Image (tube, rainbow, N blue to C red; front, side, top):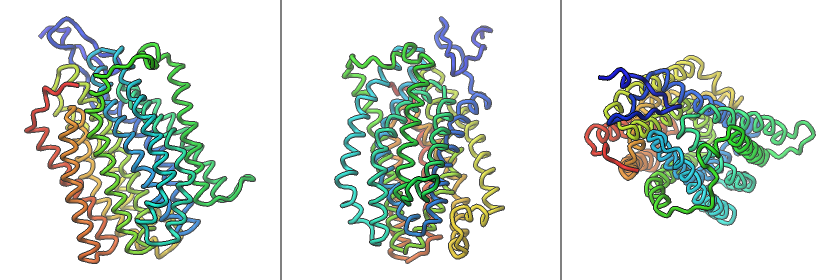
Length: 465
């Protein structure tokens, strides 16, 4: 092999020489880490918002704690539509980046904008005009229903900012410039925490708004984070380099191609979070304390997911990049290295959770009964985390191949088993909240098996975007 072929190109600067294939890309552990860690740090900052919201509202009461879970999940169900389309755009951007076609990155960005802003408007009107009616049909407790509606009355306005952030996130992960995501999310977290303290409890001369204050704080924080992303993008001259804001051109073929790739992800994300929303609705049937416990565990569970989300995002972008550079044979080596890093990160967090369970749960509540009843559920979630790490990385590897119709089928099969299992536990076996949370173990196991089978046996190498 020519010495030039042995030169390693990084994801920051893909090299294309006059050989039958480009220079061999860098998929070292350090390169994977360099792409994943800013997303992980961004997730840490994002989860500071989740932790502080839950901790502050835990001091307000069990009703506020449960209502913020249901109201927040309902909001996220519609937000997942935007995230799904953004993920599709991210995969295409990474593919074009791997091919060295920077001028097509901007076109993908613009056509994603053309779809996502009307989608945000549609989601806004659904929540604004039909949210309370939908929640009334789903929630038994009057107190939790009223608090959930109050939360959504403010939270709904954050959809436009959230969709805008998704668009820029797709761009930056696609071109492997993930550090900016860390900074934007950190700014959002700092603003949200400060406003939570001010608006939930009425500190610093602000009105005491309770659960409504938590929602308003999140909206303002999201708006400021989006403004930062826009300003930073302009400062770094990315619009010129990638033709980001060429809004005058319309490419029907590109739009259809993006939608065909993103559509299954959108529906998959929507149904996936809808099922998790249904999970919390079923838990609510067990009582207000079971719902409060589940919201505490949800917050801790999301912290456990931090390394998983970071390495999963790296997985789908890097897989798409390798296919774009015509090195599909390197994908399994890449995924094995990502799994090593991801599982190591998860085990580190789990070890802390196993050693100090009471101290961790005490962050969210000062009720001895709530703490005692939450510890067994936390142990179940710890058990599921490694399986979820494997499943998410492999599943995002499937996404990175561009075979989103297959990923949709995998997710639907997994969700089918998930719903049947949780319904059986609650309505047939009358299981307690600890047993109900074992559904996460089942989810991780089936997702891992199906994703691995497809990557080993499926015909994805020739997939074109």
